Structures are given as structure tokens and as C-alpha cells.
Image 1 (cartoon, one colour):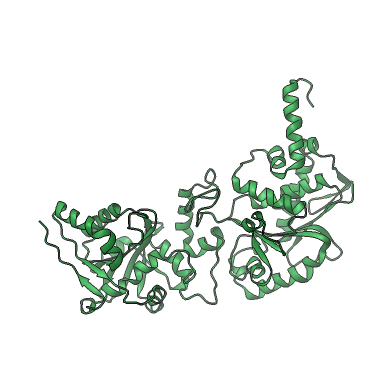
Image 2: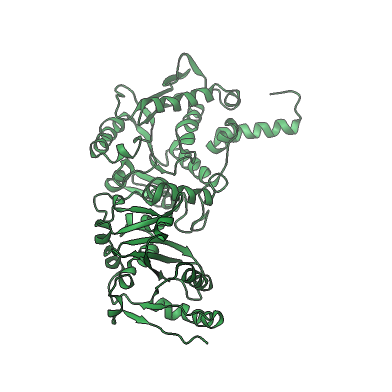
Length: 490
């Protein structure tokens, strides 16, 4: 230690080193230059510590791309393990041997840094320092291997599988999925020592990928249940979506996982760029069940807004107005479906969900009525009568403007059946999703339809399904489901 530093600085430095020996997150901050902290990284480090301590033997890690999972699981964690026990044996495997070897190089190089030597006495063996395989001066050994490759004769106290699929093409192949699964069960699992631990980590691609099949066929509990004291029978699943789908200890619904690094606006831009299908899998860890999917991504056709506006069309707006009562006003999503119907009865859609107050929704209705020259505005009957009618009455008189509002009723038909009723029109190519520059104006709708009927949200898809009641040429004949209100505007 530098003799020129003060006793207080020396005391602080020694404390940092001791914390780094004890805890992975402190170790990571100490040895990694430019380290970025966040609660999800702390949670990951805590889970990895419990793997080391034997509290968790089998861990699944699901996180979005570029959120530091490989840095911590495949690089920092092995280095920390060797520091804690120079006799540890580690295998890191990925979809290619080269990627696994790259992780090995980072781990090896880190162990040769002075910062590492400040904390641990573990040293690399001078005669075995290859980036894909190296030994410590104890009995410790690191092996890098490609998933599916041979690891005969190699054992591991800690076996890490990091991204077993290269891309969607591999993950969509039944042959490759089966191959990866057989390798995991018959090769990787057999390399573990009797008390060994396994970590499987990857960005989700497919409902039947390695993690998906593990969840389906093995005994798995969530990390939250583990923390709450639920018995661990085998696997613990740490699953962190890019945008929260419900309130939890660290964030509210709709907030970003790592806001200081990937803020919500950036994530929403990514969502627009890649579409709901890829977003749901890669960023929310919710891949779609291909076999049982009702709506298919190849059904989605697109037209630029400028092209749509050049067509001769009738324009309709349908609204799924959940959350317009006083208790939830502005807190629940509202579904909006704007439809440009051409002479051939093709639909051109802008469909989304928004959190809006009743006042904001009414303002939008008047604005879109003027901008798009709407023929009809359809609103679900119950929500309309309970939440919106007083606002609309008042605003129509104030603005001296009549809105052609139609009340919509589901007539006892379940929402799932209404939404599924869109599939024939999609299949025959009679629906176009509107784009505006790079922006897909139906990204929410696509996300919901691709996961239907298991999607968390259905606001955009339900609003779109209601178009079937008003966008058809014969819609005014449906007296049992449609009521046209005529307001006297004073």
C-alpha cells in the first residue's frame, strides 16, 4: 500500500478490500473500471453469492440485452470464485467456443490486475494461462467450451451456460433446440460435481428455448418466492423485464429496469424499432408460444401514413375505456384504434394503449375528430355511460361541436372471442398497420396480438376488435349492439 496516504485513507482502503473479499458486488466495483451500479445488478450479485454459498444450486437468469448479465455471471463471478477458493473448477459455455473463450480472457486478465491482487492471494499457474483454459497455482481450473461441444474429462463445481443460442434462427429451429437440450441433460449436467452448481442465462428467444423448457419440465420457483422463504426444490428463476409489468419493491409498473443507463424513452424507441414480437421475447423475457399462436407476425402488413392519407377512406375511432371511474382515472390503460377504411374494405390501423384521464381522452376525441374527419367514434357502453358522458356533454356545448358517438356493447360475447374475430381479416391480408417514418403506430397492438390470449394487456386489441361493429358498411343495422346518440348542442 502506498505509504504516502493518510491513516484514514488506508483504513478506508482496507475496508474496501475486505468488503470485496466478502461480497461480489463490492468486488465488482473495486476491480472493474467505470463500473455502473443499479439495484438489478445488486440483486444479481446477491443471487450469485447464494450460488457460491450453496443456498441456490440451480439458477436461471433472464435479463434484457446489454444489461450486464454476462459481465457479472461469466466474467466477474468466476474471478471472485477463484479468489474465494483457488481450488474451484469452472466451466463457461456459450453458443460458440470463441465467445466462451472471450469470457475466459476477460476473467484471466482481471485476475492479473493489481486491483485483484490487492484483494486475493490466488495466482494463475505460470504454465497454464491460455484464455480458453487456465489453472490457478492451486487445483483450480477454468474451461471455456461451445454449447454442444465436447467437455469429456472436465468437471465443474460451477457450470455456467451463457447464451446457448446465437440468434432467432437457431432458437426457432426445433432440431437445434432439441440438440441444446440433449447436450444440457446428457453432457453438461453430468460434468457437475456432487455439490456443484449450474447457472443458465440467456436472452429469451422462444417459448421452448432452454429456459422455457426448464421451467416447463423441472421444479422452478421465482427469485421473489425464494427471498420470501419458499422451499427450493431445484431451480430458482431470476427474471427481470426491461419495463416493469407490475409494481414491485424497486419500481412501479411501466418503469425501466436500468433507467440511468437505458432510460424509458430509449427502451420505447427500441420497442418501436424491433416490434412487439421481438420486444416481448428479448426485453420482457416473454417469448411467444409459436405452436399455439393465433396471430402471426407474417400477417402484419404496413403502409406509410402519407400513403394512407392519399387514399379515399372513411375514418373510425373505437375506444376501450377502462379506468375512467374516479378511483382509477388516469391509472389504467385506455385502448385507441383509429381505422382508415378504403373502398375495398381494407383497414388501415393506428392502434395503441395509453394512460389517460377522462379529460385527456375527451380532448383527444375532439382533436382527432377534427384532424381525421371521423365518421364515427365508438365507445364501449358501460365505460362510456359511467365515465365519459358528463365530460362530453359539457365539452360539446362549450366547443359548439357535435361528435358522432356510437355506444358499443359486447352483447355477452367474451373479449377473447371478439379479439380472435380479427384473425380472418388479418389472414386474408385486409389489415394494414400504419407507419410514420421509422415509427410503427401499432406496436402495442402487435405485442398484444402476438401473445394473445396470454398477453398482460389487451386494451389496443380490444379497441381494434370493436371496429368490427362500426367499420362495416352495414353497421347501423345492428340495433341490438349499437346505439347512436344525437346531442343537442347549444
